[in-house]
Image (cartoon, rainbow, N blue to C red; front, side):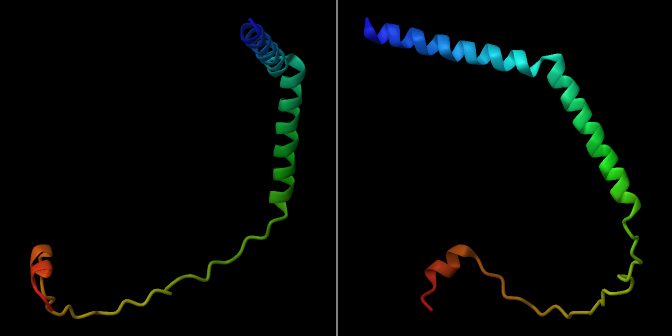
Length: 86
């Protein structure tokens, strides 16, 4: 009996918590706050982006290509490596 009552009380508490959370999340007040904060962040980004200096690119012709001669490489098989006792 105690376990059932305890389970019932816990489930009621969880259910009430979920209801209040969803109620606040979908409220108009929360939507307004969220929208206002997004607008203020966008305005700040636009203001800061105006003051950012544009740097000149200095990465042209940096890569030097070198010709490498490929030497003949010995081909190994996995099983032959295991059977050889070197």
